[in-house]
Amino acid sequence: MTVPIAIIGTGIAGLSAAQALTEAGHVVQLFDKSRGSGGRMSSKRSDAGALDLGAQYFTARDRRFVTEVQRWQANGWVAEWTPQLYTYHGGQLNLSPDEQTRWVGTPRMSAITRGLLGDLEVQFACRITEVYRGEEHWHLQDAEGFTHGPFGHVVIATPAPQATALLASAPKLAGAAAGVKMDPTWAVALAFETPLDTPMEGCFVQDSPLDWLARNRSKPGRDNTLDTWVLHATSAWSRQHIDLSKEAVIEQLHGAFAELLHDAMPAPTFSLAHRWLYARPATSHEWGVLADADLGLYVCGDWCLSGRVEGAWLSGQEAARRLHAHLQ
Ligand code: FAD
Ligand code: NAI
Image (tube, rainbow, N blue to C red; front, side, top):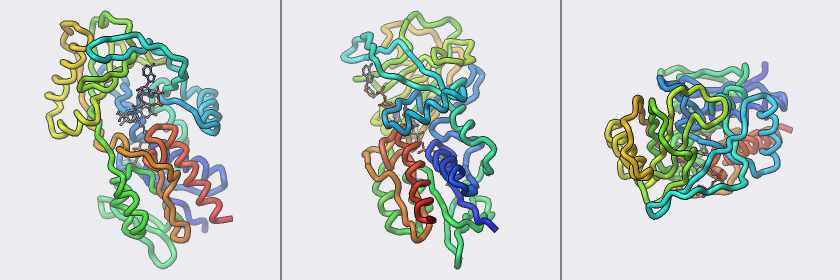
């Protein structure tokens, strides 16, 4: 009997590992506490169409990731986004064009992880609470009290604080993960019946509660009929307002947006707020992966490299490479 490899987390890191392990001939079983894949690259279906509330776009700098993104493009999962970019600094909005290639999932960010998932075996709405080793194999316990296994190896592909909680069997790895703090981000989506009178499609913001804003429907292939915007607060503002109600967060960030446009902004016909508790690592690391190969435990995610989509994907590749190499 082939004993499969368990992968906890179906964000880009977990699916990167899953794909590489499957290609190397291994059998994987995936678990995610959410109802779908994508993690921080997921998209929210709403009355205003699908909205990318987490990762907004990504860049590809590492040669291996560039090759992978070309494959995604050939599959129709991604397209280039060429927004009219602005900066906001000292109360001034300025056009800020550049030559950087920026990618987005099409028709929504979640198309990428959905494509990578394909028909791999996965259990959604399954929050793993414990990872433990029996005499020979690994087992997982979920929040409903069910046990999954046996597994030959386990790959944990979650944000650092959630990984720490699953690493009781490997105190050294748990210690490293526990040292990684992750900052929150409040995200707000607003939709307007009458398009806002601005050519802006993306903006890097300073001196404001806002950090970034994007015109969601300027991205390729979007189905938004209304003029939809996604606003991200800074880590500092998000931390200070972590327990604010969603209504109050919408009101304050809508106000910051209006101030930035120097405009009496209309009331949105649709709004929502989402709190990303573990949005980005506060410090960067160059670990690639945390591993105890003798135990058969691997930990990957954006926080093991750059806290970006590219770093998460590369970390998943590294976890798969190390696991496969150990079995050779
Ligand atoms: P995640 O995507 O967090 O995946 C982890 C998965 O594990 C999740 O699906 C979660 O549900 C699951 N999980 C967690 N705990 C458990 C458990 N106990 N049991 C089962 N499942 C569990 N990056 C860019 O490159 N460009 C950007 O513009 C950009 N903007 C961003 C904006 C925001 C607001 C946020 C939040 C992130 C942004 N990022 C951006 C970062 C990027 O989204 C992440 O680096 C990347 O998606 C992380 O992938 P991951 O697989 O490491 O983790
Ligand atoms: P990138 O190269 O487009 O941006 C990197 C940084 O360079 C930007 O944050 C911005 O400060 C600056 N910049 C880039 N283009 C600019 C322009 N035309 N004018 C002025 N400044 C410009 O993309 P990269 O390196 O892939 O970074 C991804 C983005 O994702 C970053 O903006 C980062 O802040 C954001 N991110 C947000 C997270 C969150 O939780 N809110 C989490 C992780 C990443």
